[in-house]
Length: 262
Image 1 (cartoon, helix red, strand yellow):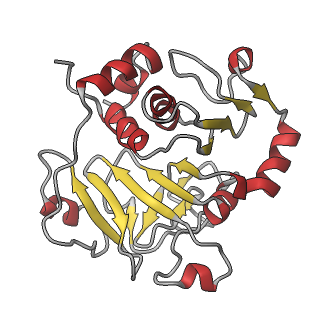
Image 2 (tube, rainbow, N blue to C red; image 1 turned 45 degrees about the vertical axis):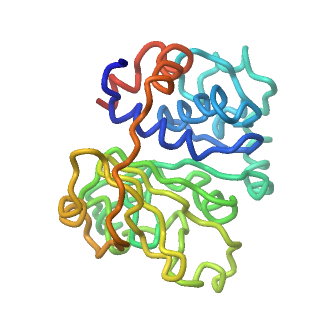
């Protein structure tokens, strides 16, 4: 039996399972979990997955360990490469090319809108984030996106984000389409407490599965809005020995996910 998976390994495996063969994805700079998910999916059910580094422009660099997607070392093993000005134009004009993006956030709200800019009053913020970068375009125009958070508390899962930079389902229902955005939006939100999707009609966040050892009451207490619960949510299926073996031998040989996200 493999050792128990860390939080980072678990999130990477859960994301990898939802990726289909032949899809196209863009990955940002500080993206260990996202990168591991994509490279693991390529080892499993999606060998023709096509991913590109947003900051670096490298396509499908092959490594057995995790590097920043902006690291120049990725150029050596990449299938192709675009320099930054071309990459920026590509993001601005070709976002609809991507099937999905995987994003982290300071805050996510009831309808899957995300905030990576500022927490609190913009004039005197409590926390400053990295900014919008290409997130507005990716959330607005990519066919779907995932939100991956390594904490789950009432400051991260909020009724309404303090700064809306990544449009999800906006105000719920069909408001995303009424505001001129294409269908899509957030597919899943993953956190240490569980996996969450969105109710088909209201588009409000819903419990899809609960992490082992976590209670529904714990999720409710850690969420600053009324999260939708339908029936008795199942326990999340944890990484298998096979998935962990591939992850640890071929994707994250140095164990960065275990070290950074225990």
